[in-house]
Image (cartoon, rainbow, N blue to C red; front, side, top):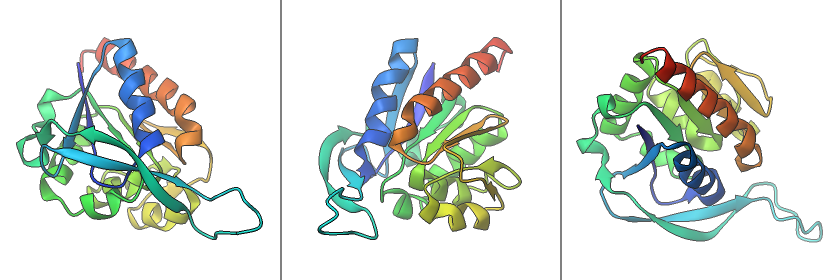
Length: 191
């Protein structure tokens, strides 16, 4: 049972690695895909906690590396039981990849579970997968969600049908709990 995990350079490390290691504990194979099958750089995104040097936006620092084993152009939606879309700055450019959008749209249209954190909502908006759905994301991406036709709630974790969305890595436990529930229910119903 394979879960698609699209990444690119500047994928947020905690958004990604929590799911990358958690999903196999329930016997799901996480297939990491990128624009090309190669090694990618993850990043740490946070507003530094030092009040003496305030930041209005997130600061980006280098994180770990993660290898994509398949390129977006080689993906087939039928190979996956769901998708996990993490945040970071990567979705800003990944949302232009027509092959990624094709596969994410097909997974959504097939009624398979999708989990999405933070800036990942930009990919779902570009793939036209959230129109009419209740979603959440990091507040600075609320406009992206609304431009995709979604109803932005501002909650930490939102489930609407087969879609679970979260604001960021602080919500990893809730997102994965709901995503795993959706996967088990979908597989139990023969999807």
